[in-house]
Length: 541
Image (cartoon, rainbow, N blue to C red; front, side, top):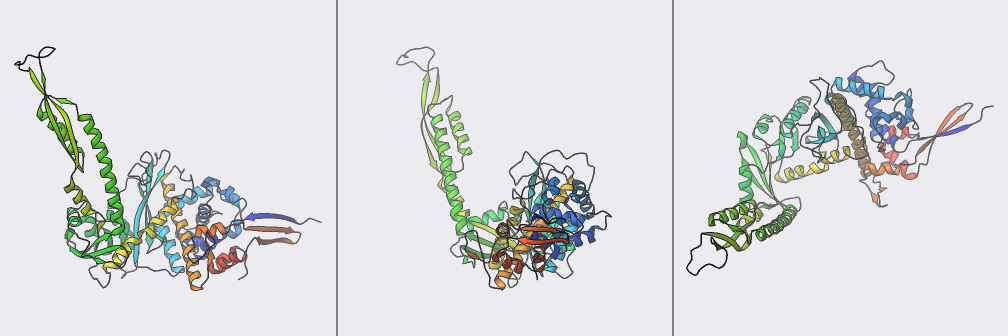
């Protein structure tokens, strides 16, 4: 009679990831948009496997996906008809190719729209920004006019030596929830890409919607604000504009109104820059002022040291004429921003012979030696610099104050840090798809960037749902320090689920499965996350 055998499979936090994927119908939505492939591993299943791999946070590159799933319950996480060996590099590569052929932005937009509908998420305000991904290797030989160009450009990773791709992302208000994604060539500038991205997103919205887009100063140019008349925008006005420089000199924080956001003062202004009626909001930040003044003082001190060193090298130096000496002094002055220089010259007679000259002998020529000098601060320039610190200008084409007050405008702009910027930090985590951008085809790089965006979507949805349920049911879970919280990060929750295994008990009558090591806090989290996640942990609903 056959003996009973036992085996285990690692589940950890992947059941949460899979549960959210199942809840939003990730596989079904991708397959519905891409179409059938007549292959065992559909494109939707390829995408879900890569999302699980990416959110596994194990730093395993894509070509080792079969190894990643070799000890995982693939039937619970993806589909009952799959095994780890099915998720080979051929399946993944073909899946990425089909995603690209179907349009990565369109596929992503379709999935994201359905996901937000499932969770009942709707906003009028959106955050827009872009980032770069540095890539290794050569990307040549593919004559595809629709594919991006992997090339050098302005690197936000501070790696100008590497070629790169640009990822443009629109996130829902005050969240990391991405609703729109575009992969762009490595030399694409925000100034030109932002209006195209906004128009593309707006084109697929329902008629009658008027969204607000929040972006950094790259959005603000005469051409862009003229082109974006059909949407509402909030952005920072570049300090390169002469009008902004003048305002920063003239604005006095004292009469400005205290903002609802602590530490800020604001004042309403008007502008017709670019022929567009708009509201400008002058903003003064106490924290920014203190920080910028500190940096200014550091720069002044550093320049003073450099100026003193230059003066010491200059003292004792002889010039042929006074004009030559003064020209050198002026060259040094022009190289400094915050300091001026005065020098003292003495004539140095030169005779045609050695030895002491006769009392009435005229020198053959006179040289002029710098015998002393003084470096002094240019107080007028420094005061002008101080005048501009801590100030910036925000702009919007929403003219109705009752629709968007100055206080709300400031608060909305500041929320960039809570939204798309956090999303980029997530995507650039060293453990997220580590070393997986080895793909040599730009088309597959584009598709992989889309999968990374879907991974961010799944992660952000899980985090949002858990936090909302904790508040709604007045529940708490422990944070990293063991203190109760209602705002855990999903990374922390994932850590809490380390060591959760599936035990397989094989007997002559069949295979029984049990999930091991679930504690009361795990059951609480699973209940809050709902039935799709509970099912992945074999929890009775």
